[in-house]
Amino acid sequence: MKRRPLIVSLVATLAVVVGAAAVVAAGARPLLGLDLQGGISAVYQPVLPAGEERPDDFEEILDETIEIIRSRVDALGVAEPDIARSGTDVIVQLPGVSDAERLRELIGRTAQLRFRPVLQTFQPGTEAYDALEVDCTLPPSERPQLAADEAGYLCARGVDVGEGDTAVRLPGAIHLVGPAALSGESIVDAFPVEQSGGFTTSVSFDAEGSAAFAAITAQLACERDQGLPGLLAIALDGVVESAPSMNPDVRCGVGLTDGAVITSGETDRDAQQQAATDLALVLRTGSLPISLEPSTFEEVSPTLGEASLDAGLLAGGIGLLLVGVWLLAFYRWLGAVALTSLVVFSVVVAGLLSALGAIGFALTLAGVAGIIVAVGITADSSILFFERLRDELALGKTVRSATIKAYASAFRTNLAGNTVTFAAAVILYALAVGPVRGFALMLGLATLLDLVILAGFTRPVVMLMVSSGFLDRRRLGFATSDRSATQEVGA
Image 1 (cartoon, helix red, strand yellow):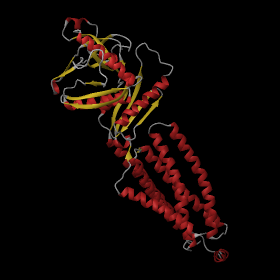
Image 2 (cartoon, one colour; image 1 turned 180 degrees about the vertical axis):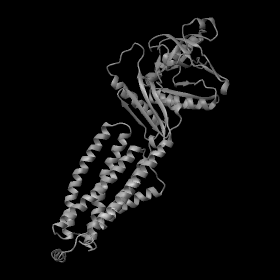
Image 3 (cartoon, helix red, strand yellow; image 1 turned 135 degrees about the vertical axis):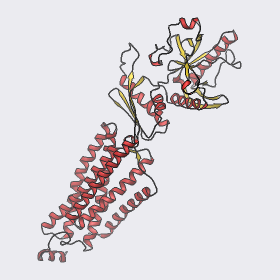
Image 4 (tube, helix red, strand yellow; image 1 turned 45 degrees about the horizontal axis):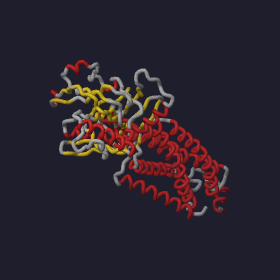
């Protein structure tokens, strides 16, 4: 039993423990998940246009939809969002966010952008407007959908009048538009721009899109020169956000080549800024290939999560206390070593969770359950070692030889058991969704950490105590017979 490798192993492990403790002492704390700090939980269902059958590549469309939603959420800076599929439903869980209405709009917004020439405009209050069989009071999702290659009627966004309780939204104009000359698929960038009149969204296109935009604006500039309106309808999800005319500096036959500008129609400056920022976000991340409607959309209270966390920590603390008392009563000095290994495990886990929180990993209530289960696994590893040591001592072996033999046997058994647990955690993490993945992740990490603590802390501490003569058969609970005493001296 060489002391130097044992001391090196113990010092290295303690250095890790000190580092983890320093991380916690510096104020770093685990990032809490939705069920612990509150947030938003929603389930979206895909909606197909009336009369349209489910396409053959529906599964691929859903996967693409999830990736676009994830890009939008990531752009908002939400830490550790959980976005996954359950059948055909899209489950979105966002911890630590509270602006429910804004997120509902951003997540479910299809953001299908099309630029169409305006053939004719009908203003509210006119006979021609009232004669049209177009109901602009319906939600956009319930209005007849206009295909990209079709001409038809589109409603302009309504105008808000008044403030507070007296605010009302007046209907906007109805535009007869031609087939789309350009779509949002050609957008390469979009960003909010502050101008003297407020905030707008600036859009730039790829080479093909720039050419198409220049062509349609050149055509409309020519119509303007002929005394026609020359309006370009900018339609987002079937609603005309704005229908600007061609400025005098837009030349007939040349058009615009430096992108487009979209106004939101909001009158309040703060609302303009948020609308421009959100529109730029959804345009950058792309339009959803399918429409979504929230079947459930709820805010999770952080109070409930805090109570659950306190209950989980209390249960873990009581369990740790009971295990510690039992270890000390049954194994004496070895029980103190096992209890210390649990403290080492707890400190390293706390530091690891705090460090993972810095890179976006969120601890969920299921993850707390995984840690509590891992505490039992760590205690079992020490018990397995100690029980094997007692068996070897019962055979009459010296404490030194019994310790070496017991550790080798216990480590093999523990490695086999932890390998099965780790494999189960990996499979569960790969197949599960939601909080169950947090349980699987913490269980897997704790299983690996258990092996490290057994080899790097429990083993060297016990063997150093044995080699120094501190742990003998009497302190281990075995009476020292003449035969065993002779063996101890001979060793």
